[in-house]
Image: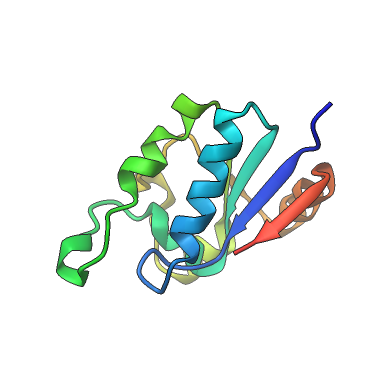
Length: 120
């Protein structure tokens, strides 16, 4: 049986390549039926903000990749409630409705569930 993998995405969509790399790993893992999860933590929750204008920042929009996650079999999607609150995000209006909100204690338990964890 394949080992499970949790990707923790901690970078905003415009701060560098980390956000895109995290999504690429998750999409590749999903395409190969790897048991994989994605947790948005710290500035990573900013990837979930609706109506981002990536073109004005001369960046590539990640929203299409986010919306494709369930099509690739990636259904374990999570974000940190504290991170969202600290950044003023309304958790009811995030672009990825499938993502489940977690508290700090739940995040600890989530990390323990996976065989391997990668933080980007």
